[in-house]
Image (cartoon, rainbow, N blue to C red; front, side):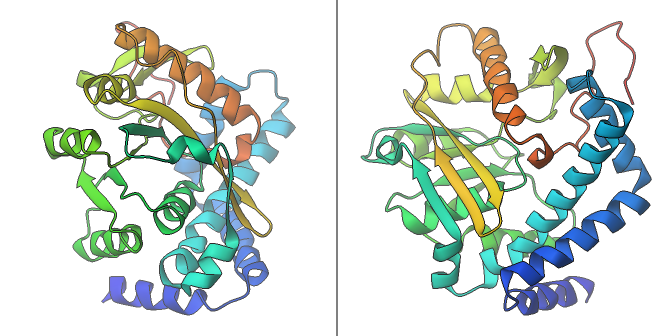
Length: 288
């Protein structure tokens, strides 16, 4: 029942003017910052490790802004997944090297965990003729998982593969010309990860970007989604010419290095509430 009520609420919020919805997101973000102490602590530790030169006051302010952006982007799923298609298209602005996404050649899209990741996915699947695929983590509640799947498969015949499934169907789709929208920048399974620097801190990181690109004989194109006052700017960057190489660890370290540069342009919009440094190299203590 709670899931159905939540979906009904999001359907209702989809009808609100964007400024009103963003105002609600601002209030929700401040509320979450105030009451979600464990996640607030995680975000503050992450930001402190990645931006050690920030003063305590600046660190607190940035942490608070990150909660606001997170909440605003979460509520934006209302219109992304339930709003009129014309409204969705109007609020999503694809910019940059759009020609990188033309054709049928295999393509891995590096989509970091900025709060606008669902906006970026929606922009690509709605506005471009190619069929896209992505890998996602199933929600624990079946009703919530079904809602997420429906929202992310709303446009363009998009396909979702669960993270627990085998990689073979993902690779088959990639080689067939279906671009893979990949989000490999979180601390997932340490067994399959390598430790490479993230803002100078060792971080368990999946080498899946390099691996999929190499096995799929695919180019890597970064796509960054930025929350704006009018919706989202979804920027397509030039393809990387030096990834993949024959060195998975070197490719993954380079990915994190470039990701840090992207984050520095909008630090409040990265997904800091995740325990990015949960797993540590042998002998190093937990930061949390």
